[in-house]
Every structure is written in structure tokens, then in C-alpha cells.
Length: 440
Image 1 (cartoon, rainbow, N blue to C red):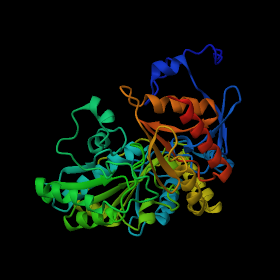
Image 2 (image 1 turned 135 degrees about the vertical axis):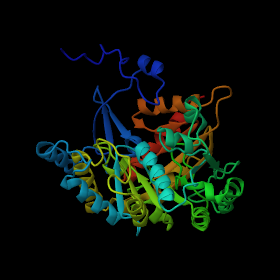
Image 3 (image 1 turned 90 degrees about the vertical axis):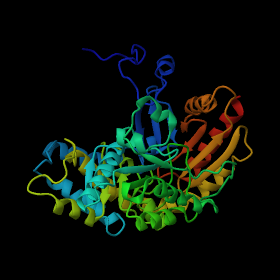
Image 4 (image 1 turned 60 degrees about the vertical axis):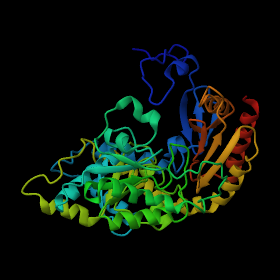
């Protein structure tokens, strides 16, 4: 069968995720290749990547070190089951990841995505509480405006209404902390100074439900998909203290923030706050092969293992957990991060990125700007009666002008690859400014 040319394709067989499918079919925008900081369309037009693909291509596109590692491994072992068996790269990759995690989080459970990592972390938390004789702790706490993927566990603790509303019922008993975004625009550079007391909302839920019913609380250290919400100074520290005092496990969802986004290996390192579990994906393999993981405190795993009798201790896993090609990609990715000093590089260029992003204050339609490290959210005034329409038009206009951005609701999100230079950042901001002026 001959392959259809771009002009012949209907673009209807592929049901695209998180996409206005009907609109896409009428005006398809197709990425054909990528290298470094740029994608190319089928016509060969360059598109500057302002979002690291989808928060994930942290080391830039087409890294030959990663490509070569995947090719070599495909010729040696394309797949090996990890149920009652193992293969060398899964163990090697787990060892390398442990070296990058905060002290004490030295057990790694592999998944295929961030959504699966979140569901796995929630299951591990429940299994741990039961293993230590706290079987009444079955309640899971998320946060308003949180995004934790699209599995039913992640949907239940997630707090974005548009993601949740079509898939009720959720896991019974879940509840949510208030989010930390102030009602009025702050144009805060980095962490807002006020708001640490919002962590006390966990105390409210403890008083409401009883600590003996709560297994875990999960938060994104910096909320990404909801439009970049940066935690106030002292908020995460306070949340850690409250969770510890009440025997509640604290899970950091670092699917977006891990691997250099904040200029460190993890947001836990950046903020100096160590959770009990960390979920990760995206930058884990530079997105070259899908993979996720959960880093777990040693004593959590040991409690689960010791509480079980003979046989399987945790009845959970995936066919592709620790997949050989993903492990090869992950090892090569960590090598690239280290060799090129990309976490340090991100930390070094973040002040320039911050200044350029905040130069959009006062630009047409801009309501607020929030940023930390190499991530920023530019919130727009919504068009009356058409929420999110203005941002989507800006997304299309930027793409047609040679820039890929991310929009969520009426918020533009930027998260460029860690290899971005000042000239790339200048081009991003100039293109966005022009789009803001051009769109009503």
C-alpha cells in the first residue's frame, strides 16, 4: 500500500488527544522532523520549540547520543519482561536515578508515563499504610487546579474541572486542598512572598476527615498544566511538616519539574523539601521513548515487602515497566544532562528568561505573569463569552510565525529546552508580543 501524500490525508483516523479534532482536520499543522531547538514542518519550515515538545524534550531534539543508544539496544534486546525476570539496563537505570534523587528515595518503580507513575504512587501509598497496620488510611488528597494525568487515580486527585467532569465517578473519599494562586494578578518574579499559610488547609482536611483516614497528599511543586502556579515561600516546607506530623505520605508529582526545569535534578532539590515519593516522566528519557517512574523511600518498600507472605508483594505493574529501549534512552539522557551541565545551564539562563518574560507586562491582553526556573505562565484576559478562544488563536498565530507555545485555557505556557540561548528566548518573546498585538 502506498503512503498518502500530506495533501491526500484525511487526518481523521487518528483520534488526537487533548485536541479540537474537528478544527485540526480543517487546518492541520504537522511536525515532520526536529533537531536542536527546532521542529520542521512537512514543507520544511522551521518552528522554534518554546515548550520542549510537551514539557519533555529537555536536552533538545535529535540528540545523537540518545538515538545511538536506542538503536544499539534494539539490536541486542528489544523487549524483556520484568515480571519475575529482569534485564541489565533496568537495574542500571534505577541505580543511576537513585543517585539523582533526594537522600532516602532509593527505590525506583518504572512505568510508561506520568499518568501511570501517579497511579502507581497512589497505590504504593495505600499498600504502605496497610502494611504498617494503618488500613483505615484510604483517603487520597489532591489540590484544586492540580493535574496528575488521566488515569482514574490521577483524575481523582486532580483538580482541573475540564479534565475531571466527563469521567465521574472518581475514587471515593478523595478531597482537595485549596490552590495557591492569588485572586489578583501579582506579576510575581519567582515564588510569591505571601501564602505559606495555605498549606494549613491540610489541617482543615485532617480535622474534617480524621488523620487516621488519610493515606497521602499529592501536589505538583510547581503546577504546570493548569497554567504555571508557583508555590509561595515556605508553603512546601509547611506542607511537609503537617504531613509528617499526621502520618500522611507526601507525594511530589514532578513529571514536569524533574530533570532541570528548575535548574536542579528535582524540584525537591530546588526547594530543599524531601517528599516520601516522587513521580517523574517526560525529561526522564528526553521523551525519546515513553517512560515514567516513581522514586520511593526505602522504608516504604521494605514495609510492603516485609508485610507480605510468600509470593508477589505488590500486585501492580505494566508489561513495559523498565522497557529495554526506554532504559537505554534514559541512561543516555542522564549522560547528556551531566556531560553538558544542562541543569546548571538552566539555572544560569533562568534570570534572563525571567526578565524577558516579564517584559510582556503591559502588553495587550496580558493579565498576569508567573515564572520559576525555565517555566513561565502568561495569563490573558479571556474574551467575553469565549473562554480560551483568544489563547488558541495566539497558539495558531505563533505556530504560523515559527514558534511552538503551549496554551491551557487562557494561559500561555513556556518551557523551552534547557539548551535554549538568549537569542531563542528573544525570538519567543518577540513572536508572542506580535501575536498579542494582532489578535483581538
